[in-house]
Length: 435
Image 1: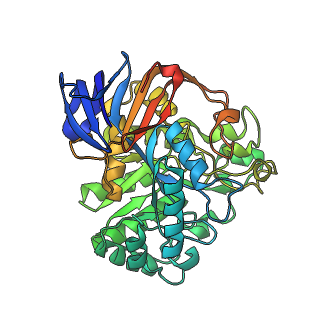
Image 2 (image 1 turned 45 degrees about the horizontal axis):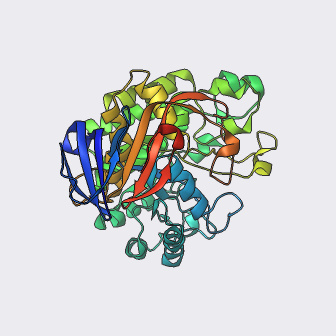
Image 3 (image 1 turned 120 degrees about the vertical axis):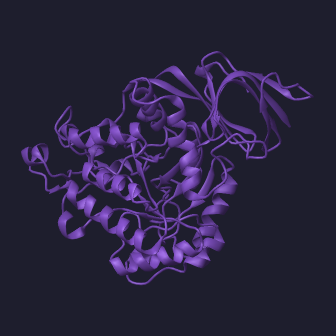
């Protein structure tokens, strides 16, 4: 069917649009964008004042856990959380059981996504077989099956030689290599950022230099191979310095920052609840200077994307001693409110820059369709309500897991609707929109 979204502010940075426009959707495609478009038999959707129509948001770093860990999340439950969070598409990491190092696993994930019929799901394949760092996975097979990138996420690629070979092969297929940047020898058995708060709590630390060494390695190999290198969940100011230098030198390096790394610091390890395992993630929450550097990178354009690193874990797995708890938190349903509240309303960036971070750049980095409202583009649309008052409640999350440090937070800004392929898949009744 045809739908004509009328009278709302449209923010489409890829086409230089920021103003009141109509958007016509015909079937699963954007048909036209402009002022006072004719109805021509379309169902008219009036956009209430204050809502903003954007190209669909893409989260390029999530863990959907299926196959193998369905007690934490499934492709269907993760896709439901995604659309509730305003994401029309997600890219899922390969650390499933078995690891997504094989076309059969990729095909299985895509079949589950099609069955759910919610967010688009783009699988990311493993760099090495079993993500064990010994032998390269069959990158050509993964690409053919539908993978859009490769990574051994959760583990840095074991050797510089293997990472070089991965970049060379992935570069042949136009795929980026995404790296969990870390020097294992320096990280050791650390569980929190090496600093005052970890020391006071008796927690083993891992310094920011641990991450930055991995970033430097990847940038050097990207320069050597000419292939695209993407830094996952960047958190340390030294990493940002390396990325900036790489970009200045014309090296094909990009990076993402997660909302928890631009909102929280390692002070949260001690307060308000000491040893709260929902404050345990890898990379860890770092000191204020690192958090402020991430904010600066978002503001000045050095950071390319915001990605959640959505990492669901069952309640029982997190309800243990801090040292024993798994790393990670859920993030799909909290990212947009946190970004609107702490970035846009704080005056750090304007809304078009946020759309670049959440839509335009993820689509470009992964080489997937989306990121714009151009005629002929997929009709993937996120409608945000920047002034909506949102209270995050862990008990109401669509994800199968509830491991969030933001439970009870009051934020300004939320999601009004999510439309995938022309179909409304999420409507927030609190936003006053009828689709």
